[in-house]
Length: 89
Image (cartoon, rainbow, N blue to C red; front, side):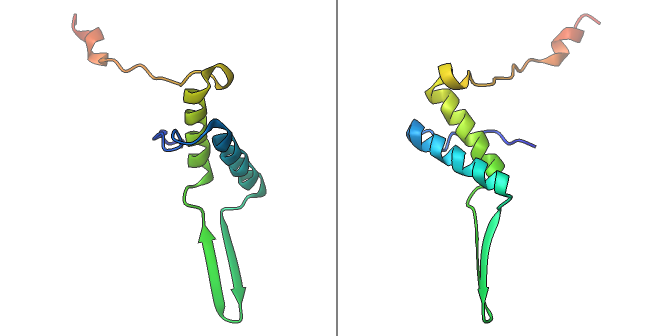
């Protein structure tokens, strides 16, 4: 399930956001989620600060804000009071 974007990448430049999106796509294609290393009883593991899906959602949102002509407008959902339709009953 996709999460809502928080806009945490909006402070970055468009080129940097595109680079982050490219790196996230590479990680997704490779199936990498965590890196680990083990040697003679010692192990080290590193996980990403954000999961790949969240990174891609944040990148898409930031790119749509920064360049809507190229990346499309932001998806907006209209919220309305559904009970309004039933007031006449």
